[in-house]
Image 1 (cartoon, one colour):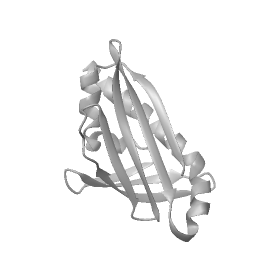
Image 2: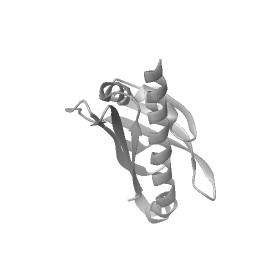
Image 3: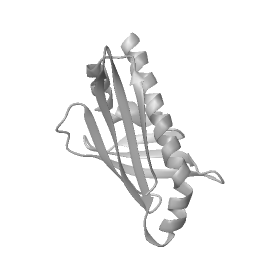
Image 4: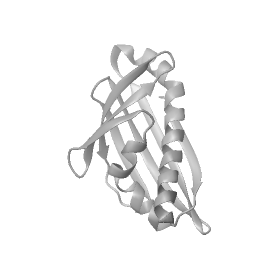
Amino acid sequence: MPSGTHRIEVNASLEQVQAFIRDPDRWEPLMPGYIKHEIVSARESVWTFKADLGFTKKAVELKLELEEQAEPNRVSFRLTGLSDPVEGSGSFEAAAAGAAASLVGSLDISGKGLMAMMMNSVMKDFVPRAVEQLTDATAAAIEAQAAH
């Protein structure tokens, strides 16, 4: 399963990071190749972005379902492909890091069906790069908001 995890320090309070990551409407537009997203309900949205898969760029549409959130410092979600046979999961986790906070983004996406092996091969480079860019962009947005 193609996966990636990226950790970054954020110059903001733990509470500011927690508030930001708990609202997907704030971080969904930060996905590399973002096209649009639509909030379907409090726990579900549809995320559309252009994935750069190396040899081609492709519009991808995923259903994002938030999982139960028992902890204020973690948001987890499930992903289901609407345009392609893929499924996966992801999360953001915040932790105190002295006067600042740390943010860890994680993403796992795998192909399903007859094309799974080929899709996973193509996504093995895309997923780690995408989670790094999404986590960095989320940290930058949190810092920009905290500065105001």
